[in-house]
Image (cartoon, one colour):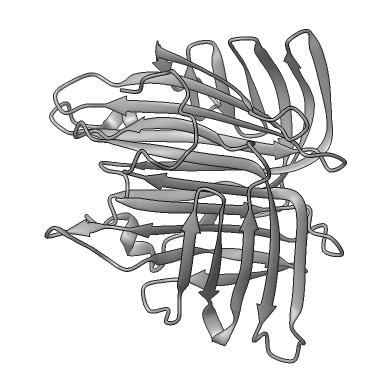
Length: 319
């Protein structure tokens, strides 16, 4: 999206991936981002976070001010790092990766109805080109080479003129008894006229070859209790279904980043991509209540304005 942004407008854009080992709480989160302040040319950043619950705090590094391009056949390149259909390669600090990914899932358009992608609100738009993917390749970090063999994960894309005032992103893979299931939901609160809107959720649960829509503008009964340690929630869906349960962040495994808004504001963003998920799916016609458990296959991201959340922020600026 960034090459077509008018000079006078501010915007941001991000292509990102996450992948998690199936046998241990070890995960990877990589972001290729664009930041464009009004009246200025866009600049690129590359972010790398490696989560390992056995080691405590994650490895975090960022490169800013990198050259942006859109190579043929790819989505975006930030410096020498690039991501596109089926491939992601690059390096950031001590980390270097060469990854391939496949997905049998169609792109997930979170927002419904689709005209919201053309509307002024919400100012953040998002899709998941691969809401459930399998990764293979290598990650090198600190002299160690980690082999990825069929790690589950996803690839996402978001862009807009302004971040939500407060947001949560949930993603889940590698569920016990349902290894092909996945969850991909974004929740946000906007600030309009000096007041905060209620939470709105948009996304889907993939289960047994079906895609069950969750949230939406007309959904009723959404419940959210969030904190840096996780959240409890109930998300209603189409046809009377609901997903409810708990997301938990283990130990000191959350990464803390500072995101700049195009208008000059900032958010602290807390992300754990090895979170545990305990969920219940109810209301599917003809089916009993189903439990979905993933020990470390969850991603929990919380975007906030406050600074007293207790998660250390990485020493890298944004913008």
